Image (cartoon, rainbow, N blue to C red):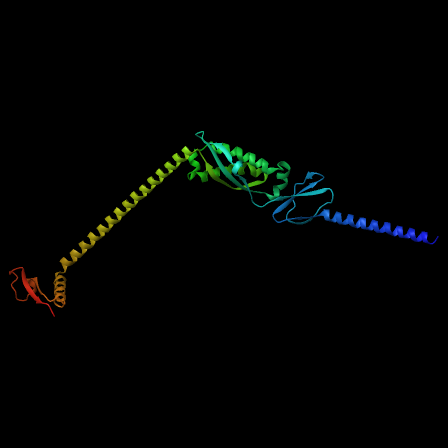
Length: 294
């Protein structure tokens, strides 16, 4: 019996040592896991040590940090889209005082090197962004007429939105890449008036195009006529200077008539100069009878 007591005490001692070893191993694993941070390629890590945001963010990759006192907040750096559509659409007044409703999409991304600044100064930055976007929308739309939102000026308005938002958001580390305005809703009477005006403008532009086309066609015909007249003038001068050619060509044509398959007698006037030995003071034209070949 007395020998069993030391054995039991030794067993308990080994059990305590084993439990302590397991506890230390678990603690080491927890410490190691807390000190290792993996940042994805599409984000950066904002480091907080004892609650204080550090200036340098963690870039994508594997990092070791001080465990238990360090917290890493991941922030996306890829391009995101903030949409204000449906019940969250934009409401504003035009320069004529007409109410206008439209959907808007703002594309943006966070500057990786300024992610700590975005987190520390704005934190819920999307809520702040939306309020500022709506304020800019009211100010910008108030400078334009309702029809400007339907015409080619819409692109200019979108560019104006993008420029103003970028000027305000960039210092905070938020980069605006695009602004899109869609689904514009106006009073029905205003829409009809704008559509009629657009159609009238398109018709006027079409008629102007037709007039310009006709003017170009008239100029083309004028140049063509001048070319034909000049060609005729050159041909006439050439024929006057070469009467022998006319006689030769005349005889060639008669020869072709004579060789034709028509069963007829061809009577043609021939200048007296074409007959050798005929008095040139005789009748100007002497009939020539050519029997057609059968």
